[in-house]
Image (cartoon, rainbow, N blue to C red):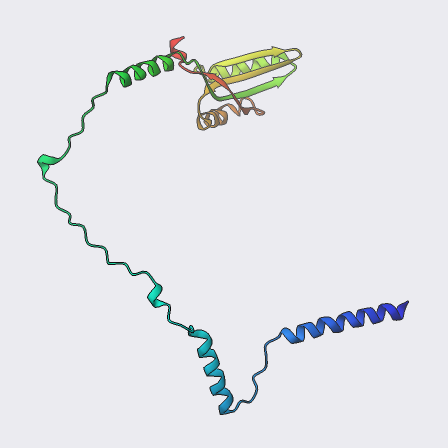
Length: 186
């Protein structure tokens, strides 16, 4: 068994070395003048095409330079802000629709999540006393109290407020939510 394994390994090594030896670069041999002339004619014949194909190549005329004349000031088109009746009606409809939008996708700060109402109210009082302009939303879904702070349309605003509120509520985090816009109209 040992001899068979040794023979298989020896044979596979021999084949792999034989394959590698034939793929290596050839060593330069001493050459005669007749050999060099034969090699140069063979390489030049390989690089030059057997026939001239230039007659089949398409020939294009050089492009002409465009004649650019400076435009006279009297010929310039003056822009106008005319809006036809149909476009004006669509703009009015869109403005009316935008006035009726009350909610948008934004962010709120989840300041407290827990089982104790007293602790939720303490965080709420601390935030409201320090930042009275912030709106707060306290929700109770048995047995958990949740306290959200603010209505922020952009993440940047929410992150800035989170930095301010973090000392009052250390476990506060941002949460994506539908927020109320146009708070002044309500």
